[in-house]
Image (cartoon, rainbow, N blue to C red; front, top):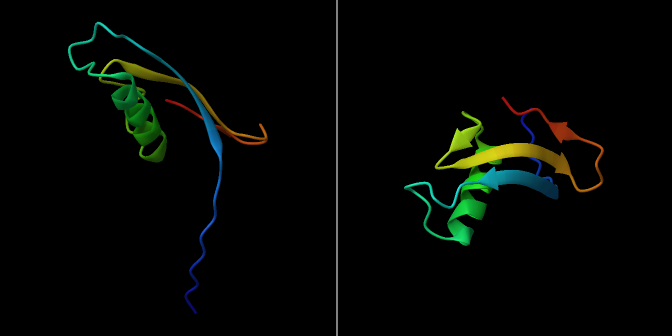
Length: 66
């Protein structure tokens, strides 16, 4: 039997970015890039954004970053 569930998780994303990177456009673009990298982490640096730490808001779960 198939089941479908939805969960909501609040996370804190710590990242660094280079505002001199050729793809830097604005702060909201950088925030969106960091968020997308946590959803589908294929690389640790993209468009000058590098993830440092991703964890749940209650600090009980930490994503391991490549």
